Image (cartoon, rainbow, N blue to C red):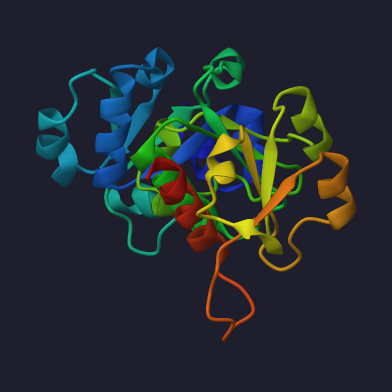
Length: 247
């Protein structure tokens, strides 16, 4: 991949067309190297760095990823951040067969039209920390390969099975027991909460339309609070639910 193509990876339409996404910074590059041990397609990533990062990367490149040295001017053009870290990578998307594979013990977290990149990145980071979760995104959700999502995920994108464009009504074909959050639901601490296969969370402002939740026969649960404010941040709600499931 040439510099002109890498410049385009900050935009979703070009990521989709080129089949790659942009990764930026030392921490995310380390996560890429770690994940490449298990995922062969990641070894096809191409790293672009400035001279001052050559020695550092030589010590952290066990999979001999392809490296191209660029000047600081070119780095500013291809990086997404205002102060480029001097090292980025063009990373190929996972093969579709890998994203579709699912284990019997795996639970799913379904996010309906989530919009905030920071929320999605935080949720992916939580799911990667605990393990055993798949993330399903509805149509009209934020792109998980958005640079802001990737930075917030801290590399979790490599450790959570991820599917996009999953319609809510499709869940019933895959998951016999579906749960959601609602202020009038059963307490989260009830034993029934852990007896579901898929957990649905809604858009930050609108939630999920009630008629759609009824159509998938979702069981409602609630996170008890003081009632002083109307709702929790979406990522916070998912974090609490995942912790409760793993507790």
